Length: 256
Image (cartoon, rainbow, N blue to C red; front, top):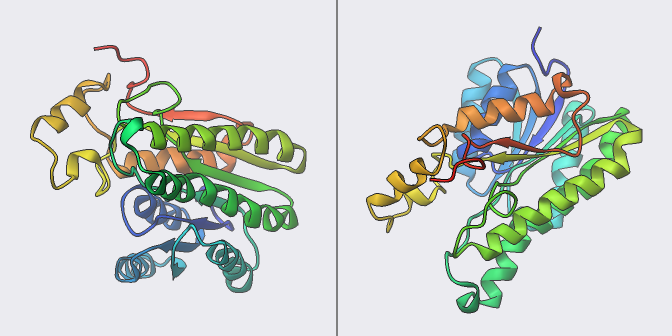
């Protein structure tokens, strides 16, 4: 039996990376999807792949910092598929790498709005739909950065992701009695377009360094992180809530 048969899911940041891999995987497990990202062309390509494999999905391009988009995603799930069971709030950015003393207030606010305020907005509008369904799963892509490790130049990113984990713990306590599970997924280094290793100005030694800090001595593929998301989103994780779930290749226990 497919793990998400009969489920309806929202996935943000679905135009590439972990979100795209999760959309393909969730659809393959018979979920019906509402996906979003900034690039309509990439979303259209994703929809084509899902539909050609027999899945059902609809896409709304937009900015996750915009509350109107959070509302529209839920409204679309209700109108198109009759409800909502899973909210995978995955979209985010790394932002500039700079010492805290050199970080601009504009960049700080942009990063926190993108990573943390958008998580709040997603939860705010997804919770009533999950309640109407009698329960469900809220999932957020956080990070080991700011949780088990601190990395120089990433103060804003770490603050935003640590904030997500705090949000998850509070929501899990708040919503558990209603059958709504809330978890944070903490990937390690993952080979996505947003990865530091794929930056245009990344020096050749960046990949070797990132690989070296993982116990597995490699980066994750997006599909590997998507499988962890599938577990947390599904009924297989029926007694898992309030967790900071590490899928980090051992970076959190690696010390050289």
